[in-house]
Picture (spheres, rainbow, N blue to C red):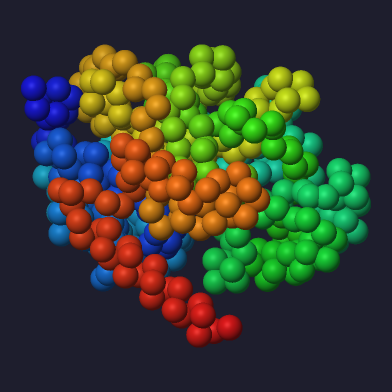
Amino acid sequence: MSLKALVGADTATDAVLLKLDRNVFHHGGLGVIRSLGRLGIRVHAMREDRFAPAAASRYARRTALPMPASADPGAVLDLLDRLANRLSGPAVLVTTDDAGAVFLAEHGDKLRSRYLFPAPPADLPRRAAGKGTLAEICRAAGVPHPATAVPVDVAEAVAFADSCGYPVVAKVNLPWTADKTTGLQSTTIVRSKDRLLALLEVARRATGDGPDTGLLLQEYLAPAPAGTLQDWFFHGYFDASSRCLFGHTGTKVRSFPAHAGMTSYGRWAPNERLRAEAVALLSGLGYQGTVDLDYRWDPRDDSYRLLDFNPRLGAQFRLFEDSAGIDVVRALHLDLTGRGFTAGEAVPDRALVVENYDPLAARDYRREGSLSIRSWLSSVRAADEAAWFALDDLAPFFLTGTRTLWQAAENRLRR
């Protein structure tokens, strides 16, 4: 049976990729385009520029409009209205970044007649994506969370770091609002007071003159013994009744930056205890839509501590394609178009590699002595899914490679 017949999607209902983050190397958008496009669904993608890798996919429609110059709600609403005028009927809206998820929750009522999308509580995506407000959610729900602080000034930041001991983890408190041109990373492991002071200065430039430093500081959960699965994530889809129609757990085998950043190599690893904890939290909050949660197992008390709550599709969601051909975005499209579906069986050990980040991650893991070149190459060859490379859709891979090399050359010239 073909994939199209197996999934049974409504190919008459288009999908529109709502992406407000201008990072051309975000692979989640390409995953959406390929996942739905392979079912025969027309996918319209906002493109960052003429050479955006995802927009070059053979599965992306050529009717997409350039991204708005700013994330101003009026500009985004206008762009989506203009795009809707080109479509034959309501389309499914898919968000792949926090800014899009927050926008849709807070301003989506104006689009209800033209698009199909979930309706979580209007304030929940902003609270979930904000690092400080996530800590409040965890405390209220009784969910384990690392010790955190949103320092109002340098003195508070230094005092928190001194109380926890270095290293500490620094995160941009409202990551979707930060100025990306400053070079501020969303997550940084800070190993000294001098590094913390330098980071606070960069954060001030990136986040403006707000009521605090713009950073959330978090205790660093030290790595567990070798061979222990410690870094986990949950990807799922919740319907209008906050029921989990699709949800699975996986592990970060490697991340960039190492032990603190995005997944560069992930593996499907069923964990019923963690899945139950995630579903209970999300259902209790009345959550609807796609979601990506990051956890770290803490050997001190055998708890899974929630690190990040992304109220939208996770970049590595294509890791989770089950035996029935269902993944997170297909579950979203099927549900919103009224197509009932039955999820298939899990596919344990299915692996996904992000080609432009995993070599950088592997370099760091090799330096710490936990990865050899041979074992890294073996793991890459064994990956079932790649973020960019696909035999049926090669253009995004080559564009990503070209732009990665170009960016590296520019960075070298600036030094």
